[in-house]
Image (cartoon, rainbow, N blue to C red; front, top):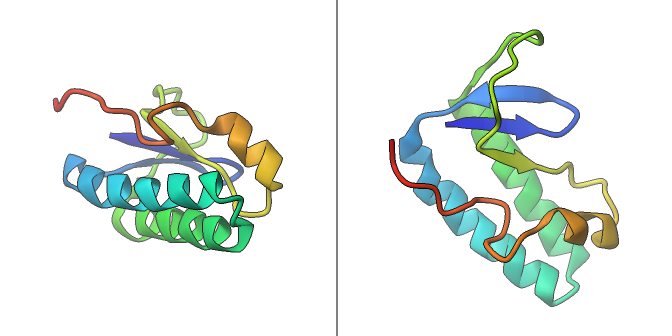
Length: 96
C-alpha cells in the first residue's frame, strides 16, 4: 500500500498496517465530527509517525499512485474536513 504524507513524500507500507491505520482513521473521524481539533491533530500525527516508522520512503521521482493521503496536523479543522470522504482517510480498498 502506498501512503502519501502531505508535505513529506510517499511511503510503501505493508498491507498489514491497514487495520492499525483504519483504527486511527476511525478516531480521526470521531474527532473531526466533534470539531475536536487538538485530538484530530494528535491522531494525524500518530498516523504519520506509524507510516514513517514502519514504511519505506519512496524516491521523490516515484510516481506511484497513493492509496491514501494523510494530511499534516497543522492544517485548520476546516481544511482537514475538505480532505475526508464518507470513508474517512483510509478507503475501504480490496486486499491485494
